[in-house]
Length: 640
Image (cartoon, rainbow, N blue to C red):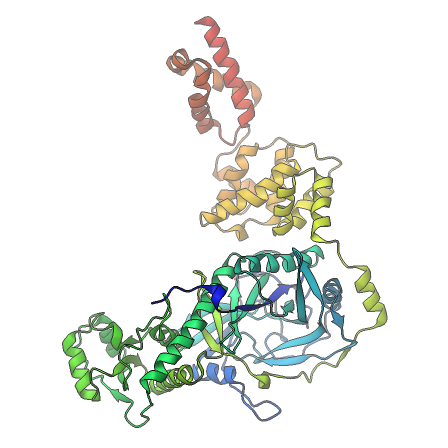
């Protein structure tokens, strides 16, 4: 196993940013996008691959078809209509979405086309009820700068967002339609070569240009980054989808570069073995042979009436476990492939005996499928209809790696910063003209308007926030990058001054620090509606609650125990204690702790503050409690 260095393989990276636009309706209908999990409509479809206008099948479409999934859709009439159900033709293009996209293209100095032609992009994973995504190429070219490095823009498209994946149940895949059709701008950069740690800055800078328009959605899921990765000797570009967090980008690029270089090393080793696929004798049904195998996985498969097959690979001993770099193995590539057919996994000869498969089972298998110590094998369990399809896919993949090195895949980013197989890379047959929507003419007046509305730069926006709200640069950056910028500015719109208890520094700190901190504890910020956040700060200004109670209120709502600020106050027993009553409570606390005060003098403020806050948290400000404690401690010390 060798040490991997990303600097030795010549990595090129390209970004694809997908950003939802903040419009009042969807791209091709009048439905208002809402984030709901309440569905009153349910229907089922089964999608199939169709030939393009040139009579060709898209490879990604054929792969999805081989998985034999049925699709169940869930809809709410408030956020979707017959257009999303593919029961009605699309309406006219949303004018606001077009205007916003033209502004973004102008900001990036991209050349906008005078005529826009809506296209259909084949998508048969079920995320579009039509079997395609509507997309329009708006402009090409352009650039932006990041710390002196010029990043080229390849293309800017306006398209529909996909349906929300609700998960799989066996052969059923489920989607919610509330997100389907939301306007989405896709920006693809030219490939660039930079240090991996700089990729985050490049993506962040592009995201900030979009946010500067104040016409894009904020929050998790509203912006997604795909990254294209290639290495000098690889000869292919691998698209990695679903990078949700910018912090993942560096890890994803490093892992994918390592995987690609590792596959080239595996390819060299496969060629040395001179493995040739034996089409006539490569697989045998071993269900009966393994009927007494002690492996729980094998026995569970037999109970489900799945077939167990052994697949032989001549002269391949050691190849499935061969690891040129840590975490990169041919066996791992095959395991990823079979999982996307809904199969739990696959055993290979280099990891056995293990998992309940004993030495005697292996000896019996070798004799049955007629292989020796130089050979390798796989053990696979699947339904009778699926087993041969999956075996053929495994054989094809190993042959491709041997002959070509790196399979041309679309991959998915994992939480750990790795990538896993998603589907084959789509081909040119994927795109064809949309017949239900006429070409869209971009007038000279629209182009001029877009240029006039190019937003301020990120730096100018930060400086404006600092000056207007009297906050430091760090808080200004945090609030600008957060999903709460519009709420933050809205809170101050009705105020004549910022001299309330809920000042700008305090509010931005709560929005950018307190709420994310509660999220890290596993609480759900979606339950905390903007109206309730605003209401909470209004109550702080009016003296109905204290600063200390805000954390308690938000935690209660985000935990799902309350829906509103008032309900959370009731559930957490929050009520402001009058100053006269507070005096009496503090006096009693001091009297009960005379011994501590005698020993520690004024330093007793520390332990007594803990006692007082336990009783008074959320009922009085910490500053007021501290002042009263100190006053009463000093008075007691005078009498001692």
